[in-house]
Image (cartoon, rainbow, N blue to C red; front, side):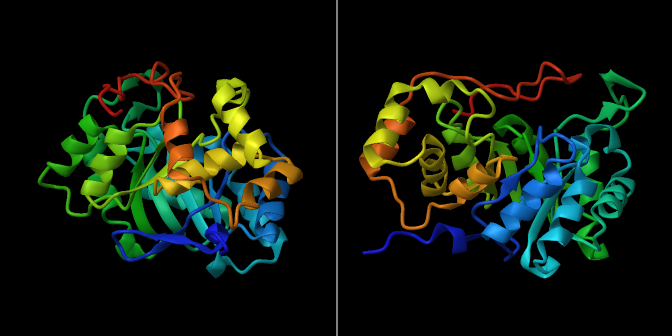
Length: 298
Protein backbone atom coordinates (compact mmCIF):
# COMPACT_ATOMS: atom_id res chain seq x y z
CA UNK A 1 0.00 0.00 0.00
CA UNK A 2 1.33 3.45 -0.93
CA UNK A 3 2.21 5.65 2.03
CA UNK A 4 1.14 9.26 2.56
CA UNK A 5 1.45 11.69 -0.34
CA UNK A 6 2.96 14.39 1.87
CA UNK A 7 3.73 16.84 -0.94
CA UNK A 8 -0.01 17.11 -1.78
CA UNK A 9 -1.18 17.34 1.83
CA UNK A 10 -2.35 20.42 3.71
CA UNK A 11 -3.27 21.17 7.32
CA UNK A 12 -6.52 23.07 7.91
CA UNK A 13 -6.15 26.24 9.97
CA UNK A 14 -8.74 27.72 12.35
CA UNK A 15 -9.68 30.16 9.56
CA UNK A 16 -10.59 27.32 7.20
CA UNK A 17 -7.47 27.96 5.08
CA UNK A 18 -5.28 25.02 4.00
CA UNK A 19 -1.53 25.39 4.58
CA UNK A 20 0.75 23.07 2.56
CA UNK A 21 2.53 20.77 5.04
CA UNK A 22 6.02 21.29 3.61
CA UNK A 23 7.53 24.62 2.58
CA UNK A 24 10.89 26.19 1.84
CA UNK A 25 12.51 28.17 4.62
CA UNK A 26 14.76 31.09 3.63
CA UNK A 27 16.34 32.24 6.92
CA UNK A 28 20.14 32.61 6.72
CA UNK A 29 20.09 32.17 2.95
CA UNK A 30 22.74 34.39 1.40
CA UNK A 31 21.91 37.15 -1.10
CA UNK A 32 21.57 35.98 -4.71
CA UNK A 33 21.00 32.38 -3.57
CA UNK A 34 17.43 32.84 -2.39
CA UNK A 35 15.98 33.74 -5.80
CA UNK A 36 17.27 30.51 -7.35
CA UNK A 37 16.32 28.42 -4.31
CA UNK A 38 12.71 29.63 -4.48
CA UNK A 39 12.53 28.99 -8.23
CA UNK A 40 14.01 25.47 -7.86
CA UNK A 41 11.64 24.64 -4.99
CA UNK A 42 8.51 25.78 -6.80
CA UNK A 43 9.49 23.98 -10.00
CA UNK A 44 10.04 20.83 -7.93
CA UNK A 45 6.50 21.11 -6.56
CA UNK A 46 6.78 23.06 -3.30
CA UNK A 47 3.77 25.34 -2.82
CA UNK A 48 4.73 27.06 0.46
CA UNK A 49 7.49 29.67 0.81
CA UNK A 50 8.49 31.22 4.15
CA UNK A 51 10.30 34.54 4.49
CA UNK A 52 10.41 37.58 6.81
CA UNK A 53 11.17 41.27 6.71
CA UNK A 54 14.09 40.60 9.08
CA UNK A 55 15.71 38.18 6.61
CA UNK A 56 16.27 41.02 4.13
CA UNK A 57 15.38 38.75 1.21
CA UNK A 58 11.70 39.38 0.47
CA UNK A 59 12.49 41.05 -2.88
CA UNK A 60 14.50 38.01 -3.98
CA UNK A 61 11.75 35.66 -2.81
CA UNK A 62 9.28 37.63 -4.93
CA UNK A 63 11.61 37.44 -7.94
CA UNK A 64 12.10 33.67 -7.45
CA UNK A 65 8.32 33.19 -7.41
CA UNK A 66 8.00 35.07 -10.72
CA UNK A 67 10.94 33.14 -12.24
CA UNK A 68 9.28 29.83 -11.38
CA UNK A 69 6.32 30.38 -13.67
CA UNK A 70 3.98 29.01 -10.97
CA UNK A 71 0.88 31.24 -10.63
CA UNK A 72 0.80 33.32 -7.44
CA UNK A 73 -2.60 31.92 -6.41
CA UNK A 74 -1.14 28.42 -6.23
CA UNK A 75 1.55 29.41 -3.71
CA UNK A 76 1.28 29.89 0.05
CA UNK A 77 3.51 32.81 1.08
CA UNK A 78 4.31 33.55 4.73
CA UNK A 79 6.18 36.61 5.91
CA UNK A 80 6.71 38.27 9.29
CA UNK A 81 6.56 41.60 11.09
CA UNK A 82 9.98 42.61 12.40
CA UNK A 83 10.50 43.46 16.10
CA UNK A 84 11.28 47.14 15.47
CA UNK A 85 8.04 47.57 13.47
CA UNK A 86 5.60 46.41 16.19
CA UNK A 87 4.16 49.92 16.61
CA UNK A 88 3.90 50.30 12.81
CA UNK A 89 2.08 47.15 11.73
CA UNK A 90 0.48 48.68 8.63
CA UNK A 91 3.83 50.09 7.49
CA UNK A 92 5.37 46.65 8.12
CA UNK A 93 2.97 44.74 5.89
CA UNK A 94 3.12 47.47 3.21
CA UNK A 95 6.93 47.23 3.20
CA UNK A 96 6.81 43.44 2.83
CA UNK A 97 4.21 43.54 0.04
CA UNK A 98 6.24 46.16 -1.84
CA UNK A 99 9.42 44.06 -1.64
CA UNK A 100 7.62 40.82 -2.48
CA UNK A 101 5.78 42.68 -5.28
CA UNK A 102 2.49 41.11 -4.21
CA UNK A 103 -1.02 42.29 -3.37
CA UNK A 104 -1.38 39.98 -0.38
CA UNK A 105 0.34 37.30 1.71
CA UNK A 106 -1.32 34.11 2.86
CA UNK A 107 0.07 34.33 6.37
CA UNK A 108 1.52 37.27 8.32
CA UNK A 109 3.23 36.53 11.63
CA UNK A 110 4.46 38.58 14.57
CA UNK A 111 8.07 37.35 14.32
CA UNK A 112 8.99 37.65 18.03
CA UNK A 113 7.05 38.75 21.13
CA UNK A 114 9.44 41.67 21.59
CA UNK A 115 8.53 45.24 20.67
CA UNK A 116 12.12 46.39 20.23
CA UNK A 117 13.01 50.09 20.19
CA UNK A 118 14.20 50.91 16.63
CA UNK A 119 16.56 53.59 17.99
CA UNK A 120 18.20 51.19 20.47
CA UNK A 121 17.98 47.44 19.83
CA UNK A 122 18.97 46.72 23.44
CA UNK A 123 15.76 48.38 24.65
CA UNK A 124 12.10 47.41 24.57
CA UNK A 125 9.62 50.16 23.69
CA UNK A 126 8.36 51.62 26.99
CA UNK A 127 4.77 52.15 25.83
CA UNK A 128 4.19 49.14 23.57
CA UNK A 129 4.03 45.34 23.80
CA UNK A 130 2.86 42.36 21.76
CA UNK A 131 -0.72 42.76 23.04
CA UNK A 132 -0.88 46.15 21.31
CA UNK A 133 0.83 44.67 18.26
CA UNK A 134 -1.85 41.97 18.05
CA UNK A 135 -4.59 44.61 18.28
CA UNK A 136 -3.11 46.14 15.10
CA UNK A 137 -2.56 42.73 13.45
CA UNK A 138 -6.25 41.94 13.90
CA UNK A 139 -7.15 44.82 11.59
CA UNK A 140 -5.22 43.35 8.64
CA UNK A 141 -7.44 40.50 7.35
CA UNK A 142 -10.22 43.02 6.58
CA UNK A 143 -7.81 44.99 4.34
CA UNK A 144 -7.27 42.04 1.98
CA UNK A 145 -3.50 42.40 2.32
CA UNK A 146 -3.28 39.39 4.62
CA UNK A 147 -5.35 36.20 4.46
CA UNK A 148 -4.35 34.78 7.87
CA UNK A 149 -2.53 36.17 10.91
CA UNK A 150 -0.38 34.38 13.44
CA UNK A 151 2.62 34.53 15.73
CA UNK A 152 6.10 33.10 15.99
CA UNK A 153 8.36 32.23 18.93
CA UNK A 154 5.52 32.49 21.45
CA UNK A 155 5.94 30.13 24.42
CA UNK A 156 3.07 28.99 26.67
CA UNK A 157 3.59 31.94 29.06
CA UNK A 158 3.28 34.59 26.34
CA UNK A 159 0.50 32.73 24.53
CA UNK A 160 -1.59 32.65 27.69
CA UNK A 161 -0.97 36.36 28.17
CA UNK A 162 -2.15 37.08 24.63
CA UNK A 163 -5.17 34.77 24.56
CA UNK A 164 -6.40 35.89 28.00
CA UNK A 165 -6.31 39.56 27.06
CA UNK A 166 -9.85 40.90 26.37
CA UNK A 167 -8.57 42.65 23.22
CA UNK A 168 -7.67 39.31 21.61
CA UNK A 169 -10.62 38.73 19.26
CA UNK A 170 -8.82 36.62 16.65
CA UNK A 171 -7.01 33.50 17.82
CA UNK A 172 -3.69 33.23 15.93
CA UNK A 173 -3.96 30.74 13.06
CA UNK A 174 -0.33 29.61 13.42
CA UNK A 175 2.52 29.67 15.93
CA UNK A 176 5.81 29.17 14.08
CA UNK A 177 8.36 27.76 16.52
CA UNK A 178 11.66 25.90 16.57
CA UNK A 179 10.87 22.17 16.42
CA UNK A 180 13.29 19.26 16.06
CA UNK A 181 14.04 16.20 18.25
CA UNK A 182 16.57 18.18 20.32
CA UNK A 183 13.98 20.92 20.97
CA UNK A 184 10.68 19.04 20.80
CA UNK A 185 8.43 21.42 22.83
CA UNK A 186 5.62 18.85 23.10
CA UNK A 187 3.76 20.76 25.84
CA UNK A 188 3.76 23.94 23.77
CA UNK A 189 2.51 22.09 20.68
CA UNK A 190 -0.22 20.43 22.76
CA UNK A 191 -1.23 23.78 24.26
CA UNK A 192 -1.45 25.33 20.78
CA UNK A 193 -3.53 22.40 19.55
CA UNK A 194 -5.93 22.81 22.51
CA UNK A 195 -6.50 26.43 21.42
CA UNK A 196 -6.91 25.60 17.72
CA UNK A 197 -3.51 27.03 16.77
CA UNK A 198 -1.50 25.15 14.14
CA UNK A 199 2.27 24.87 14.64
CA UNK A 200 4.87 25.24 11.92
CA UNK A 201 8.34 23.95 12.77
CA UNK A 202 11.33 26.09 11.80
CA UNK A 203 14.94 24.86 12.02
CA UNK A 204 13.21 21.49 11.62
CA UNK A 205 16.50 20.03 10.36
CA UNK A 206 18.34 21.49 13.36
CA UNK A 207 19.92 24.26 11.23
CA UNK A 208 23.44 24.47 9.78
CA UNK A 209 26.10 22.20 11.36
CA UNK A 210 23.46 20.73 13.66
CA UNK A 211 24.56 18.32 16.42
CA UNK A 212 21.66 16.16 15.20
CA UNK A 213 23.80 14.96 12.29
CA UNK A 214 26.18 13.33 14.76
CA UNK A 215 23.33 11.59 16.58
CA UNK A 216 23.92 7.85 16.36
CA UNK A 217 20.25 6.92 16.71
CA UNK A 218 19.21 9.20 13.84
CA UNK A 219 22.13 8.16 11.60
CA UNK A 220 21.52 4.44 12.23
CA UNK A 221 17.83 4.85 11.42
CA UNK A 222 18.63 6.75 8.21
CA UNK A 223 21.04 4.03 7.14
CA UNK A 224 18.58 1.29 7.99
CA UNK A 225 15.80 2.95 5.94
CA UNK A 226 18.22 4.12 3.22
CA UNK A 227 16.91 7.67 3.51
CA UNK A 228 18.65 10.94 4.41
CA UNK A 229 18.60 12.09 8.07
CA UNK A 230 16.85 15.22 6.79
CA UNK A 231 14.00 13.20 5.29
CA UNK A 232 13.51 11.38 8.61
CA UNK A 233 13.47 14.66 10.55
CA UNK A 234 10.79 16.02 8.21
CA UNK A 235 8.68 12.87 8.59
CA UNK A 236 9.06 13.10 12.39
CA UNK A 237 7.56 16.61 12.35
CA UNK A 238 4.83 15.85 9.83
CA UNK A 239 3.73 12.71 11.68
CA UNK A 240 3.49 14.78 14.87
CA UNK A 241 1.05 17.06 13.03
CA UNK A 242 2.98 20.25 12.33
CA UNK A 243 4.05 21.76 9.01
CA UNK A 244 7.77 21.98 8.26
CA UNK A 245 9.85 24.58 6.40
CA UNK A 246 13.30 23.08 5.74
CA UNK A 247 15.81 25.67 4.58
CA UNK A 248 18.33 24.97 1.85
CA UNK A 249 19.83 26.83 -1.09
CA UNK A 250 21.33 23.71 -2.68
CA UNK A 251 19.26 22.38 -5.61
CA UNK A 252 19.97 18.74 -4.75
CA UNK A 253 18.98 19.15 -1.09
CA UNK A 254 15.90 21.23 -1.85
CA UNK A 255 14.73 18.44 -4.15
CA UNK A 256 15.71 15.58 -1.81
CA UNK A 257 13.83 17.17 1.09
CA UNK A 258 10.68 17.12 -1.05
CA UNK A 259 11.05 13.45 -2.04
CA UNK A 260 9.16 12.04 0.92
CA UNK A 261 5.94 10.85 -0.70
CA UNK A 262 5.15 7.28 0.33
CA UNK A 263 7.55 7.42 3.28
CA UNK A 264 6.48 6.92 6.87
CA UNK A 265 8.13 6.24 10.21
CA UNK A 266 6.71 3.46 12.36
CA UNK A 267 5.39 4.48 15.78
CA UNK A 268 8.50 2.84 17.29
CA UNK A 269 10.77 4.94 15.05
CA UNK A 270 8.90 8.14 15.99
CA UNK A 271 9.32 7.22 19.67
CA UNK A 272 13.04 6.64 19.13
CA UNK A 273 13.43 10.17 17.78
CA UNK A 274 11.13 11.54 20.51
CA UNK A 275 13.55 10.05 23.01
CA UNK A 276 16.79 11.64 21.77
CA UNK A 277 18.40 12.93 24.99
CA UNK A 278 20.40 15.94 23.74
CA UNK A 279 18.93 19.44 23.92
CA UNK A 280 19.86 22.56 22.00
CA UNK A 281 18.11 25.62 20.63
CA UNK A 282 19.14 27.22 17.38
CA UNK A 283 17.33 30.44 18.35
CA UNK A 284 17.60 31.63 21.94
CA UNK A 285 16.47 34.99 23.30
CA UNK A 286 19.76 36.44 24.63
CA UNK A 287 19.95 38.87 21.69
CA UNK A 288 16.55 40.40 22.53
CA UNK A 289 15.96 43.23 25.02
CA UNK A 290 13.53 41.04 26.98
CA UNK A 291 13.28 37.36 27.82
CA UNK A 292 10.71 35.52 25.69
CA UNK A 293 11.41 31.89 26.55
CA UNK A 294 10.34 31.08 30.11
CA UNK A 295 10.77 27.28 30.11
CA UNK A 296 8.08 24.66 30.64
CA UNK A 297 7.32 24.12 26.93
CA UNK A 298 8.66 20.59 26.78
